[in-house]
Image 1 (cartoon, each protein chain N blue to C red):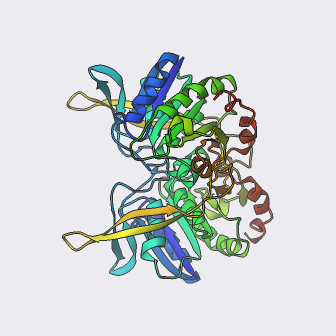
Image 2: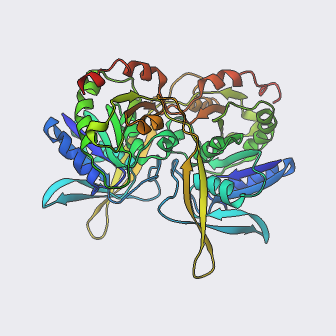
Length: 256
Length: 256
């Protein structure tokens, strides 16, 4: 089994190292990840610049390919170029991300976008994130990865569907099981902190916090608050089908 | 009525100028757009760098705000900072983009991501794109914008839903009406062209083409091929609900 690992925190991130360690015994590990941190890069691909790929070593041992692009770029270039005439991955895992990718953040997440690319290519895929930015302990997320892989391979998801997994940042013994969830839709209240540079130009730093997280235990953000591992099945067909039926009633063509 | 315009081709793009002209008589126009071209930037937001905002003039007349960020950044900073204590927009339009944003490209589109941000903020929103990269004539798209606005304002869409509009690049008389569509799911066959720089390092340019576009006339890509204006209702809840039910049968918690 060939397992493709990537992330958006960059190839040197400890979450990727923890992930690589947790799956090393399960198969051949192939890594292609951004050369530098790419958080909140969304589902970007690089068209206007070329990509460069460098071999990345840890303690003198080859670890993977560092790509000067986004997580989506890493998946694309690995599949179509680096693995061009080789067997394709049987599984793609993106993470372990530092910080949760729940609720509306799902749409900004480079971690999730890499798993989306895996799903587009027909590879069983999941994104996994740890809900903390400080003093991360990746062991619970790494352990859960080992548990999830056989389940995912035993029961293939529909084409184009993948999993977005988030793990609460508590000791393993305090995790209250797994909750199957939907993406929360709570908005952020954003605030831009204005500063002035030495040339008297204003610049703005984005800050903000989620407001009114849904109380429903089946919402991803709520599962994390409840110390549960959240698993949301995600796809990339953005069509809102109920509205599609409604729009057919609009009088476009008569008026033209 | 305050109409917020943005795009991903940059504040100097002719598609934005055509859009601004087409809506000028309908209300107060407010523009905040990327300072430079931001195509295929996806739904990125800028967290690691501050945003700068400059007033942008055309022929000595104030046109709008140029932001050194992504389309999503432009919407956020306009709503939360530039318009902080002012009435919020009644309508958001992103475009007119040079090049279609149909099928799987929807998920990489900065143009669409700006409309997503509008929908997140509860503003009636649409993205509009012209399906050509060469010799663009924005007049049919601009005319259709004028037709769409009263329909959209008369029949509010559900919270979080917005429209992704694509216009074929043919003379207005050859457009065969409007088709309500779903997002196509045809994949790309990607190819990376490898070059070698003067220092003997390989670099890769992404190229590719869509394969097997669905024959179904209700698919956005097909509507464009059929010379129809395509309107896809889009939302940002990525949850795949059918799989959610299926996942509940997986044996996670028994094994922990």
